Length: 223
Length: 350
Image (tube, rainbow over all chains, first blue to last red; front, side, top):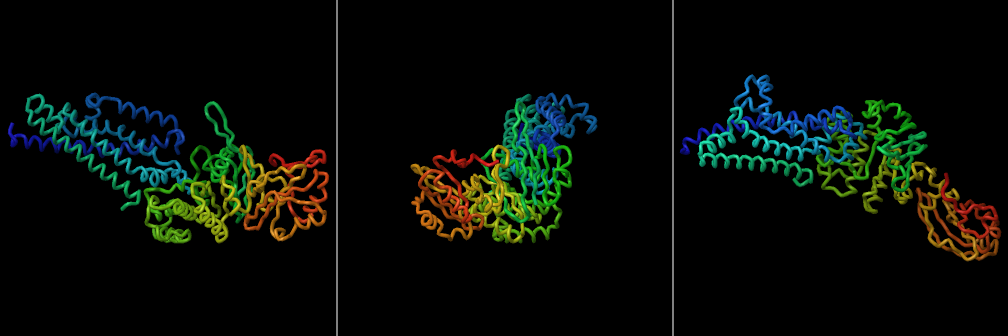
Protein backbone atom coordinates (compact mmCIF):
# COMPACT_ATOMS: atom_id res chain seq x y z
CA UNK A 1 0.00 0.00 0.00
CA UNK A 2 1.42 3.33 -0.99
CA UNK A 3 1.32 6.49 1.05
CA UNK A 4 -1.26 8.04 -1.24
CA UNK A 5 -3.47 5.01 -0.68
CA UNK A 6 -2.95 5.18 3.05
CA UNK A 7 -3.58 8.89 3.42
CA UNK A 8 -7.39 9.00 2.99
CA UNK A 9 -7.76 5.94 5.23
CA UNK A 10 -5.63 7.52 7.94
CA UNK A 11 -7.40 10.84 7.67
CA UNK A 12 -10.82 9.25 7.98
CA UNK A 13 -9.64 7.13 10.91
CA UNK A 14 -8.27 10.18 12.69
CA UNK A 15 -11.53 12.06 12.20
CA UNK A 16 -13.53 9.05 13.46
CA UNK A 17 -11.35 8.62 16.53
CA UNK A 18 -11.45 12.29 17.44
CA UNK A 19 -15.19 12.38 16.86
CA UNK A 20 -15.86 9.37 19.09
CA UNK A 21 -13.40 10.31 21.81
CA UNK A 22 -14.47 13.95 21.80
CA UNK A 23 -18.13 13.24 22.31
CA UNK A 24 -17.54 10.42 24.74
CA UNK A 25 -15.27 12.69 26.80
CA UNK A 26 -17.90 15.40 26.88
CA UNK A 27 -20.53 12.94 28.09
CA UNK A 28 -18.10 11.38 30.60
CA UNK A 29 -17.29 14.79 32.05
CA UNK A 30 -20.92 15.86 32.27
CA UNK A 31 -22.03 12.52 33.72
CA UNK A 32 -19.02 11.64 35.84
CA UNK A 33 -18.73 14.99 37.59
CA UNK A 34 -22.15 14.96 39.28
CA UNK A 35 -21.83 11.26 40.04
CA UNK A 36 -18.45 11.79 41.70
CA UNK A 37 -19.83 14.75 43.66
CA UNK A 38 -22.82 12.63 44.70
CA UNK A 39 -20.52 9.82 45.88
CA UNK A 40 -18.58 12.23 48.09
CA UNK A 41 -21.61 14.06 49.47
CA UNK A 42 -23.63 10.97 50.31
CA UNK A 43 -20.75 9.11 51.91
CA UNK A 44 -20.47 8.75 55.67
CA UNK A 45 -19.36 12.09 57.05
CA UNK A 46 -20.50 13.82 53.85
CA UNK A 47 -22.86 16.76 53.81
CA UNK A 48 -25.78 14.78 52.42
CA UNK A 49 -24.90 11.48 54.02
CA UNK A 50 -27.25 8.88 52.72
CA UNK A 51 -26.19 5.25 52.99
CA UNK A 52 -28.61 3.66 50.52
CA UNK A 53 -27.99 6.22 47.75
CA UNK A 54 -24.25 5.99 48.27
CA UNK A 55 -24.26 2.21 48.11
CA UNK A 56 -26.46 2.05 45.01
CA UNK A 57 -24.43 4.65 43.09
CA UNK A 58 -21.20 3.06 44.27
CA UNK A 59 -22.36 -0.37 43.10
CA UNK A 60 -23.44 0.96 39.70
CA UNK A 61 -20.09 2.65 39.23
CA UNK A 62 -18.27 -0.53 40.21
CA UNK A 63 -20.30 -2.63 37.78
CA UNK A 64 -19.67 -0.10 35.02
CA UNK A 65 -15.98 -0.17 35.70
CA UNK A 66 -15.55 -3.91 35.94
CA UNK A 67 -17.28 -4.85 32.67
CA UNK A 68 -14.71 -5.41 29.92
CA UNK A 69 -15.28 -2.79 27.27
CA UNK A 70 -15.79 -5.29 24.45
CA UNK A 71 -18.60 -6.88 26.40
CA UNK A 72 -20.12 -3.50 27.15
CA UNK A 73 -19.98 -2.64 23.46
CA UNK A 74 -22.06 -5.64 22.53
CA UNK A 75 -24.28 -5.71 25.60
CA UNK A 76 -25.34 -2.14 25.02
CA UNK A 77 -26.46 -2.67 21.41
CA UNK A 78 -30.19 -2.51 22.21
CA UNK A 79 -29.67 0.59 24.31
CA UNK A 80 -27.53 2.21 21.64
CA UNK A 81 -30.17 1.56 19.02
CA UNK A 82 -32.70 3.20 21.30
CA UNK A 83 -30.55 6.29 21.80
CA UNK A 84 -29.05 6.98 18.37
CA UNK A 85 -31.25 4.85 16.14
CA UNK A 86 -28.45 2.60 14.93
CA UNK A 87 -25.86 0.32 16.51
CA UNK A 88 -23.10 0.57 13.91
CA UNK A 89 -20.80 3.41 12.95
CA UNK A 90 -18.88 5.96 14.94
CA UNK A 91 -21.95 7.71 16.33
CA UNK A 92 -23.24 4.42 17.71
CA UNK A 93 -19.86 3.76 19.32
CA UNK A 94 -20.10 6.97 21.31
CA UNK A 95 -22.80 5.44 23.49
CA UNK A 96 -20.81 2.49 24.88
CA UNK A 97 -17.68 4.64 25.08
CA UNK A 98 -19.49 7.20 27.18
CA UNK A 99 -21.18 4.57 29.31
CA UNK A 100 -17.80 3.02 29.99
CA UNK A 101 -16.10 6.34 30.73
CA UNK A 102 -18.73 7.88 33.01
CA UNK A 103 -18.09 5.55 35.98
CA UNK A 104 -14.35 5.69 35.34
CA UNK A 105 -14.31 9.48 35.52
CA UNK A 106 -16.79 9.47 38.44
CA UNK A 107 -14.29 7.55 40.57
CA UNK A 108 -11.51 9.93 39.60
CA UNK A 109 -13.72 12.88 40.54
CA UNK A 110 -14.51 11.23 43.85
CA UNK A 111 -10.83 10.71 44.64
CA UNK A 112 -9.99 14.27 43.64
CA UNK A 113 -12.71 15.77 45.84
CA UNK A 114 -11.73 13.63 48.80
CA UNK A 115 -8.30 15.16 48.72
CA UNK A 116 -9.72 18.61 49.47
CA UNK A 117 -8.94 19.55 53.06
CA UNK A 118 -12.00 19.03 55.25
CA UNK A 119 -11.08 22.19 57.09
CA UNK A 120 -11.96 24.21 53.99
CA UNK A 121 -15.40 22.62 53.85
CA UNK A 122 -15.83 23.41 57.50
CA UNK A 123 -14.74 27.01 57.00
CA UNK A 124 -17.37 27.46 54.28
CA UNK A 125 -19.99 25.90 56.54
CA UNK A 126 -18.97 28.17 59.38
CA UNK A 127 -19.61 31.15 57.07
CA UNK A 128 -23.14 29.91 56.54
CA UNK A 129 -22.49 28.15 53.25
CA UNK A 130 -24.79 25.32 52.21
CA UNK A 131 -24.11 22.27 50.09
CA UNK A 132 -24.16 24.23 46.82
CA UNK A 133 -21.61 26.72 48.12
CA UNK A 134 -19.34 23.98 49.37
CA UNK A 135 -19.44 22.12 46.05
CA UNK A 136 -19.19 25.09 43.69
CA UNK A 137 -16.92 27.39 45.66
CA UNK A 138 -14.76 24.99 47.63
CA UNK A 139 -14.67 21.39 46.42
CA UNK A 140 -14.60 21.88 42.65
CA UNK A 141 -12.24 24.90 42.49
CA UNK A 142 -9.87 23.37 45.03
CA UNK A 143 -9.84 20.03 43.21
CA UNK A 144 -9.57 21.59 39.74
CA UNK A 145 -5.97 20.50 39.01
CA UNK A 146 -6.79 16.91 40.03
CA UNK A 147 -10.00 17.01 38.01
CA UNK A 148 -8.11 18.13 34.91
CA UNK A 149 -5.55 15.37 35.48
CA UNK A 150 -8.42 12.89 35.82
CA UNK A 151 -10.02 14.08 32.62
CA UNK A 152 -6.69 13.66 30.80
CA UNK A 153 -6.51 10.07 31.98
CA UNK A 154 -10.10 9.54 30.89
CA UNK A 155 -9.39 10.84 27.37
CA UNK A 156 -6.43 8.49 27.04
CA UNK A 157 -8.44 5.53 28.25
CA UNK A 158 -11.15 6.47 25.73
CA UNK A 159 -8.60 6.52 22.91
CA UNK A 160 -7.67 2.98 23.95
CA UNK A 161 -11.31 1.88 24.17
CA UNK A 162 -12.10 3.41 20.79
CA UNK A 163 -9.76 0.90 19.16
CA UNK A 164 -12.27 -1.78 20.09
CA UNK A 165 -15.13 0.18 18.61
CA UNK A 166 -14.28 -1.50 15.30
CA UNK A 167 -16.40 -4.38 16.55
CA UNK A 168 -19.46 -2.30 15.75
CA UNK A 169 -17.95 -0.93 12.57
CA UNK A 170 -17.09 2.42 14.05
CA UNK A 171 -13.74 2.80 12.38
CA UNK A 172 -11.06 4.92 13.93
CA UNK A 173 -7.32 4.50 14.27
CA UNK A 174 -7.36 1.36 16.39
CA UNK A 175 -9.70 -0.36 13.99
CA UNK A 176 -7.57 0.68 11.02
CA UNK A 177 -4.45 -0.78 12.61
CA UNK A 178 -6.30 -4.00 13.35
CA UNK A 179 -8.27 -4.64 10.16
CA UNK A 180 -5.88 -3.29 7.53
CA UNK A 181 -2.58 -3.44 9.28
CA UNK A 182 -2.80 -6.63 11.27
CA UNK A 183 -5.32 -8.79 9.48
CA UNK A 184 -4.20 -7.83 5.93
CA UNK A 185 -0.51 -7.77 6.78
CA UNK A 186 -0.12 -4.11 5.83
CA UNK A 187 2.71 -3.68 8.29
CA UNK A 188 3.58 -0.20 7.11
CA UNK A 189 0.02 1.02 7.67
CA UNK A 190 -0.10 -0.62 11.06
CA UNK A 191 3.11 1.05 12.12
CA UNK A 192 1.97 4.46 10.90
CA UNK A 193 -1.35 4.09 12.71
CA UNK A 194 0.33 3.03 15.91
CA UNK A 195 2.70 5.97 15.59
CA UNK A 196 -0.25 8.33 15.21
CA UNK A 197 -1.91 6.79 18.27
CA UNK A 198 1.26 7.21 20.28
CA UNK A 199 1.54 10.81 19.13
CA UNK A 200 -2.10 11.45 19.98
CA UNK A 201 -1.83 9.99 23.48
CA UNK A 202 1.40 11.86 24.11
CA UNK A 203 -0.15 15.10 22.93
CA UNK A 204 -3.18 14.67 25.17
CA UNK A 205 -0.96 13.88 28.13
CA UNK A 206 1.27 16.86 27.45
CA UNK A 207 -1.65 19.25 27.12
CA UNK A 208 -3.26 17.83 30.26
CA UNK A 209 -0.05 18.07 32.25
CA UNK A 210 0.51 21.62 31.08
CA UNK A 211 -3.00 22.60 32.16
CA UNK A 212 -2.51 20.97 35.57
CA UNK A 213 0.82 22.72 35.98
CA UNK A 214 -0.67 26.05 35.05
CA UNK A 215 -3.46 25.65 37.60
CA UNK A 216 -1.16 24.40 40.33
CA UNK A 217 1.32 27.17 39.66
CA UNK A 218 -1.38 29.75 40.07
CA UNK A 219 -2.19 28.25 43.47
CA UNK A 220 1.41 28.33 44.51
CA UNK A 221 1.26 31.96 43.56
CA UNK A 222 3.94 31.89 40.88
CA UNK A 223 2.48 33.71 37.93
CA UNK B 1 -23.47 36.94 74.34
CA UNK B 2 -22.65 33.25 74.20
CA UNK B 3 -24.30 30.90 76.64
CA UNK B 4 -24.11 27.15 76.68
CA UNK B 5 -26.39 25.23 79.00
CA UNK B 6 -25.65 21.65 80.06
CA UNK B 7 -23.92 21.07 76.77
CA UNK B 8 -22.93 17.46 76.18
CA UNK B 9 -21.35 15.84 73.17
CA UNK B 10 -20.92 12.10 72.92
CA UNK B 11 -19.10 10.56 69.99
CA UNK B 12 -20.33 7.07 69.24
CA UNK B 13 -18.16 4.62 67.40
CA UNK B 14 -19.01 1.00 66.80
CA UNK B 15 -17.71 -0.36 70.06
CA UNK B 16 -17.45 2.59 72.38
CA UNK B 17 -18.67 6.00 73.36
CA UNK B 18 -16.48 8.99 74.02
CA UNK B 19 -17.87 11.84 76.03
CA UNK B 20 -16.18 14.97 74.74
CA UNK B 21 -18.40 17.43 76.58
CA UNK B 22 -19.96 16.52 79.86
CA UNK B 23 -22.43 19.21 80.87
CA UNK B 24 -20.67 22.43 79.98
CA UNK B 25 -22.15 25.70 81.19
CA UNK B 26 -20.34 28.66 79.75
CA UNK B 27 -21.29 32.29 79.83
CA UNK B 28 -19.42 34.76 77.69
CA UNK B 29 -20.44 38.36 78.27
CA UNK B 30 -20.80 40.86 75.47
CA UNK B 31 -17.57 42.58 74.51
CA UNK B 32 -15.17 40.37 76.41
CA UNK B 33 -12.36 38.11 75.30
CA UNK B 34 -12.97 34.72 76.83
CA UNK B 35 -10.30 32.06 76.79
CA UNK B 36 -10.93 28.36 77.23
CA UNK B 37 -7.80 26.45 78.12
CA UNK B 38 -7.07 22.81 78.72
CA UNK B 39 -4.91 20.01 77.46
CA UNK B 40 -5.64 18.29 74.18
CA UNK B 41 -8.57 15.97 74.62
CA UNK B 42 -10.13 18.16 77.29
CA UNK B 43 -13.04 18.99 75.00
CA UNK B 44 -12.11 22.58 74.06
CA UNK B 45 -12.33 21.95 70.35
CA UNK B 46 -15.67 20.17 70.63
CA UNK B 47 -16.94 23.05 72.70
CA UNK B 48 -16.08 25.80 70.23
CA UNK B 49 -17.34 23.71 67.32
CA UNK B 50 -20.62 23.20 69.16
CA UNK B 51 -21.04 26.96 69.54
CA UNK B 52 -21.73 27.44 65.82
CA UNK B 53 -23.05 23.92 65.55
CA UNK B 54 -20.37 22.66 63.20
CA UNK B 55 -20.67 19.84 65.67
CA UNK B 56 -24.18 18.96 66.80
CA UNK B 57 -24.37 18.79 70.59
CA UNK B 58 -25.84 15.56 71.93
CA UNK B 59 -27.89 17.56 74.41
CA UNK B 60 -28.01 21.03 75.91
CA UNK B 61 -28.49 24.39 74.29
CA UNK B 62 -26.29 27.05 72.71
CA UNK B 63 -27.44 30.65 72.63
CA UNK B 64 -25.51 33.25 70.65
CA UNK B 65 -26.63 36.89 70.69
CA UNK B 66 -29.94 35.91 72.16
CA UNK B 67 -30.65 33.32 69.50
CA UNK B 68 -31.03 29.67 70.47
CA UNK B 69 -28.99 28.00 67.75
CA UNK B 70 -29.81 24.49 68.89
CA UNK B 71 -33.49 25.24 68.24
CA UNK B 72 -32.68 26.58 64.76
CA UNK B 73 -30.63 23.59 63.75
CA UNK B 74 -33.39 21.50 62.23
CA UNK B 75 -33.39 17.76 61.93
CA UNK B 76 -30.88 15.64 60.11
CA UNK B 77 -27.31 16.50 59.28
CA UNK B 78 -28.15 19.40 56.96
CA UNK B 79 -28.14 22.83 58.56
CA UNK B 80 -31.38 24.76 58.18
CA UNK B 81 -31.42 28.08 56.34
CA UNK B 82 -31.96 29.83 59.67
CA UNK B 83 -28.87 28.20 61.16
CA UNK B 84 -26.82 29.12 58.11
CA UNK B 85 -27.99 32.72 58.42
CA UNK B 86 -27.02 32.72 62.09
CA UNK B 87 -23.61 31.23 61.27
CA UNK B 88 -22.90 33.99 58.79
CA UNK B 89 -23.02 36.40 61.72
CA UNK B 90 -20.50 34.39 63.74
CA UNK B 91 -16.91 34.71 62.55
CA UNK B 92 -14.52 31.84 62.97
CA UNK B 93 -10.77 31.56 62.64
CA UNK B 94 -8.92 28.28 62.50
CA UNK B 95 -5.60 26.88 63.60
CA UNK B 96 -4.61 25.95 60.07
CA UNK B 97 -6.20 29.08 58.55
CA UNK B 98 -8.34 27.08 56.09
CA UNK B 99 -7.86 29.51 53.23
CA UNK B 100 -8.73 28.42 49.71
CA UNK B 101 -5.46 28.03 47.81
CA UNK B 102 -7.36 28.47 44.55
CA UNK B 103 -8.38 32.03 45.41
CA UNK B 104 -6.44 35.19 45.97
CA UNK B 105 -6.36 36.83 49.38
CA UNK B 106 -9.13 39.17 48.25
CA UNK B 107 -11.12 36.25 46.84
CA UNK B 108 -10.88 34.47 50.18
CA UNK B 109 -12.18 37.48 52.07
CA UNK B 110 -14.99 37.84 49.52
CA UNK B 111 -16.19 34.26 49.95
CA UNK B 112 -18.48 34.89 52.96
CA UNK B 113 -19.86 37.93 51.14
CA UNK B 114 -20.62 35.79 48.10
CA UNK B 115 -22.52 33.46 50.38
CA UNK B 116 -24.45 36.45 51.70
CA UNK B 117 -25.25 37.50 48.14
CA UNK B 118 -23.42 40.83 48.24
CA UNK B 119 -22.85 42.47 44.84
CA UNK B 120 -19.44 42.26 43.20
CA UNK B 121 -18.55 45.93 43.68
CA UNK B 122 -19.63 45.95 47.33
CA UNK B 123 -17.70 42.72 47.98
CA UNK B 124 -14.57 44.17 46.51
CA UNK B 125 -14.86 47.35 48.56
CA UNK B 126 -15.55 45.47 51.78
CA UNK B 127 -12.75 42.99 51.23
CA UNK B 128 -10.21 45.73 50.59
CA UNK B 129 -11.40 47.61 53.68
CA UNK B 130 -11.02 44.52 55.83
CA UNK B 131 -7.59 43.76 54.43
CA UNK B 132 -6.66 47.28 55.35
CA UNK B 133 -7.87 46.69 58.91
CA UNK B 134 -5.64 43.61 59.27
CA UNK B 135 -2.72 45.37 57.59
CA UNK B 136 -2.61 43.41 54.35
CA UNK B 137 -4.09 45.86 51.87
CA UNK B 138 -1.05 45.49 49.62
CA UNK B 139 -1.36 41.71 49.37
CA UNK B 140 -4.94 41.57 48.06
CA UNK B 141 -3.91 39.95 44.80
CA UNK B 142 -1.47 37.46 46.30
CA UNK B 143 -2.32 33.80 46.77
CA UNK B 144 -2.28 32.27 50.26
CA UNK B 145 0.78 30.20 49.34
CA UNK B 146 2.76 33.41 49.01
CA UNK B 147 2.02 34.54 52.56
CA UNK B 148 3.65 33.79 55.88
CA UNK B 149 1.72 32.02 58.63
CA UNK B 150 0.95 35.24 60.44
CA UNK B 151 -0.26 36.89 57.25
CA UNK B 152 -2.46 33.89 56.46
CA UNK B 153 -4.08 34.15 59.86
CA UNK B 154 -4.66 37.86 59.29
CA UNK B 155 -6.47 36.96 56.08
CA UNK B 156 -8.43 34.38 58.09
CA UNK B 157 -9.41 37.10 60.54
CA UNK B 158 -10.38 39.51 57.76
CA UNK B 159 -12.52 36.75 56.24
CA UNK B 160 -14.14 36.06 59.60
CA UNK B 161 -15.08 39.73 59.90
CA UNK B 162 -16.65 39.95 56.46
CA UNK B 163 -20.16 39.17 57.67
CA UNK B 164 -19.99 41.93 60.34
CA UNK B 165 -20.17 39.40 63.15
CA UNK B 166 -20.81 40.28 66.78
CA UNK B 167 -18.99 37.15 67.86
CA UNK B 168 -15.66 35.75 66.80
CA UNK B 169 -14.69 32.15 67.52
CA UNK B 170 -11.01 31.38 67.49
CA UNK B 171 -10.06 27.71 67.33
CA UNK B 172 -6.38 27.63 68.36
CA UNK B 173 -5.77 30.52 65.97
CA UNK B 174 -2.22 31.11 67.12
CA UNK B 175 -1.12 27.54 67.79
CA UNK B 176 0.56 27.13 64.43
CA UNK B 177 2.44 30.42 64.70
CA UNK B 178 5.78 31.35 66.19
CA UNK B 179 5.76 33.33 69.45
CA UNK B 180 6.39 36.71 67.86
CA UNK B 181 3.66 36.30 65.25
CA UNK B 182 1.36 34.95 67.94
CA UNK B 183 1.84 38.20 69.81
CA UNK B 184 0.90 40.36 66.85
CA UNK B 185 -2.13 38.25 65.93
CA UNK B 186 -3.34 38.37 69.54
CA UNK B 187 -2.84 42.11 69.57
CA UNK B 188 -4.98 42.32 66.44
CA UNK B 189 -7.74 40.29 68.09
CA UNK B 190 -7.51 42.52 71.14
CA UNK B 191 -7.75 45.67 69.00
CA UNK B 192 -10.76 44.32 67.12
CA UNK B 193 -12.37 43.44 70.42
CA UNK B 194 -11.85 47.00 71.67
CA UNK B 195 -12.64 48.88 68.45
CA UNK B 196 -15.57 46.86 67.14
CA UNK B 197 -16.90 45.66 70.47
CA UNK B 198 -16.42 42.16 69.15
CA UNK B 199 -17.00 39.35 71.61
CA UNK B 200 -14.23 36.80 71.25
CA UNK B 201 -14.33 33.20 72.40
CA UNK B 202 -10.98 31.58 71.93
CA UNK B 203 -9.67 28.18 72.79
CA UNK B 204 -6.02 27.55 73.25
CA UNK B 205 -3.57 25.31 75.03
CA UNK B 206 -1.18 28.21 75.53
CA UNK B 207 -1.48 29.96 78.87
CA UNK B 208 0.32 32.98 77.46
CA UNK B 209 -2.63 33.64 75.18
CA UNK B 210 -4.94 33.90 78.16
CA UNK B 211 -2.43 36.03 80.01
CA UNK B 212 -2.07 38.55 77.22
CA UNK B 213 -5.59 39.02 75.87
CA UNK B 214 -8.31 37.40 77.94
CA UNK B 215 -10.72 39.15 80.25
CA UNK B 216 -12.14 35.85 81.44
CA UNK B 217 -10.99 32.28 81.28
CA UNK B 218 -12.21 28.76 81.83
CA UNK B 219 -10.21 25.62 82.44
CA UNK B 220 -11.49 22.40 80.91
CA UNK B 221 -10.63 18.88 81.87
CA UNK B 222 -12.33 15.65 80.87
CA UNK B 223 -15.12 17.46 79.06
CA UNK B 224 -16.03 19.66 81.99
CA UNK B 225 -15.31 23.24 82.95
CA UNK B 226 -13.45 22.87 86.23
CA UNK B 227 -12.79 26.57 86.85
CA UNK B 228 -14.01 29.78 85.27
CA UNK B 229 -14.28 33.47 85.93
CA UNK B 230 -12.70 36.79 85.15
CA UNK B 231 -8.92 36.71 85.19
CA UNK B 232 -8.53 39.08 88.17
CA UNK B 233 -11.07 37.06 90.11
CA UNK B 234 -9.30 33.82 89.29
CA UNK B 235 -5.99 35.27 90.42
CA UNK B 236 -7.63 36.32 93.65
CA UNK B 237 -9.04 32.85 94.26
CA UNK B 238 -6.91 30.84 96.67
CA UNK B 239 -6.06 27.45 95.27
CA UNK B 240 -7.07 28.41 91.75
CA UNK B 241 -5.37 26.07 89.36
CA UNK B 242 -5.73 28.47 86.46
CA UNK B 243 -4.12 31.22 88.46
CA UNK B 244 -1.25 28.94 89.39
CA UNK B 245 -0.59 27.90 85.79
CA UNK B 246 -1.20 31.37 84.43
CA UNK B 247 1.27 32.68 86.83
CA UNK B 248 3.78 30.17 88.04
CA UNK B 249 6.25 31.18 90.69
CA UNK B 250 9.62 29.55 90.66
CA UNK B 251 11.24 28.15 93.74
CA UNK B 252 10.87 24.78 95.36
CA UNK B 253 8.01 24.71 97.84
CA UNK B 254 10.27 23.13 100.45
CA UNK B 255 11.54 24.95 103.48
CA UNK B 256 12.93 22.99 106.39
CA UNK B 257 10.26 23.27 109.09
CA UNK B 258 8.85 26.44 107.66
CA UNK B 259 5.53 27.38 106.14
CA UNK B 260 5.59 28.18 102.43
CA UNK B 261 2.94 30.55 101.15
CA UNK B 262 2.25 32.07 97.73
CA UNK B 263 1.16 35.66 97.82
CA UNK B 264 -0.58 37.23 94.82
CA UNK B 265 -0.67 40.99 94.38
CA UNK B 266 -2.91 42.76 91.93
CA UNK B 267 -3.33 46.34 90.87
CA UNK B 268 -2.21 48.89 93.43
CA UNK B 269 -1.19 46.27 95.98
CA UNK B 270 1.89 45.70 93.81
CA UNK B 271 3.25 49.01 95.06
CA UNK B 272 3.07 48.14 98.75
CA UNK B 273 6.14 47.09 100.75
CA UNK B 274 4.22 44.17 102.22
CA UNK B 275 7.05 41.79 102.98
CA UNK B 276 9.09 44.40 104.81
CA UNK B 277 6.05 45.45 106.80
CA UNK B 278 5.27 41.84 107.67
CA UNK B 279 8.82 41.22 108.86
CA UNK B 280 8.81 44.38 110.94
CA UNK B 281 5.39 43.92 112.45
CA UNK B 282 5.89 40.35 113.62
CA UNK B 283 9.66 40.41 113.85
CA UNK B 284 10.04 37.25 111.76
CA UNK B 285 12.63 36.21 109.20
CA UNK B 286 11.13 35.79 105.79
CA UNK B 287 12.94 34.05 102.95
CA UNK B 288 11.85 34.72 99.41
CA UNK B 289 11.83 31.47 97.42
CA UNK B 290 10.54 32.78 94.13
CA UNK B 291 8.84 35.75 92.59
CA UNK B 292 7.27 36.84 89.32
CA UNK B 293 5.85 40.05 87.98
CA UNK B 294 3.73 40.31 84.87
CA UNK B 295 0.83 42.01 83.20
CA UNK B 296 -2.22 39.77 83.19
CA UNK B 297 -5.33 40.93 81.42
CA UNK B 298 -3.90 44.44 81.35
CA UNK B 299 -3.33 44.51 85.12
CA UNK B 300 0.01 44.55 86.85
CA UNK B 301 0.18 41.36 88.85
CA UNK B 302 2.85 39.90 91.08
CA UNK B 303 3.36 36.61 92.77
CA UNK B 304 5.72 35.84 95.59
CA UNK B 305 6.61 32.54 97.17
CA UNK B 306 7.90 33.06 100.68
CA UNK B 307 8.83 30.87 103.61
CA UNK B 308 7.78 31.84 107.13
CA UNK B 309 9.49 30.20 110.08
CA UNK B 310 7.56 27.67 112.15
CA UNK B 311 4.58 25.46 111.36
CA UNK B 312 1.13 26.56 110.31
CA UNK B 313 -0.12 27.27 113.81
CA UNK B 314 2.70 29.77 114.31
CA UNK B 315 1.77 31.61 111.15
CA UNK B 316 -1.96 32.04 111.41
CA UNK B 317 -1.52 35.64 112.45
CA UNK B 318 1.01 36.69 109.76
CA UNK B 319 -1.10 34.99 107.07
CA UNK B 320 -4.12 36.82 108.40
CA UNK B 321 -2.13 40.05 108.21
CA UNK B 322 -1.35 39.44 104.54
CA UNK B 323 -4.97 38.70 103.76
CA UNK B 324 -5.97 41.88 105.53
CA UNK B 325 -3.80 43.80 103.07
CA UNK B 326 -6.07 42.54 100.34
CA UNK B 327 -3.66 39.95 99.04
CA UNK B 328 -4.42 36.42 97.94
CA UNK B 329 -2.56 33.96 100.12
CA UNK B 330 -2.12 30.29 99.26
CA UNK B 331 -0.53 28.04 101.82
CA UNK B 332 1.62 25.65 99.80
CA UNK B 333 3.27 23.50 102.46
CA UNK B 334 2.93 23.80 106.17
CA UNK B 335 4.02 21.30 108.79
CA UNK B 336 1.02 20.75 111.02
CA UNK B 337 -1.39 22.29 108.50
CA UNK B 338 -3.79 19.34 108.72
CA UNK B 339 -3.81 19.57 112.48
CA UNK B 340 -4.63 23.22 112.23
CA UNK B 341 -7.48 22.40 109.92
CA UNK B 342 -6.15 24.39 106.99
CA UNK B 343 -6.43 22.98 103.55
CA UNK B 344 -3.18 22.86 101.63
CA UNK B 345 -3.29 23.24 97.85
CA UNK B 346 -6.26 21.41 96.49
CA UNK B 347 -6.12 19.23 93.43
CA UNK B 348 -8.50 21.39 91.49
CA UNK B 349 -11.66 23.23 92.17
CA UNK B 350 -14.90 21.85 90.89
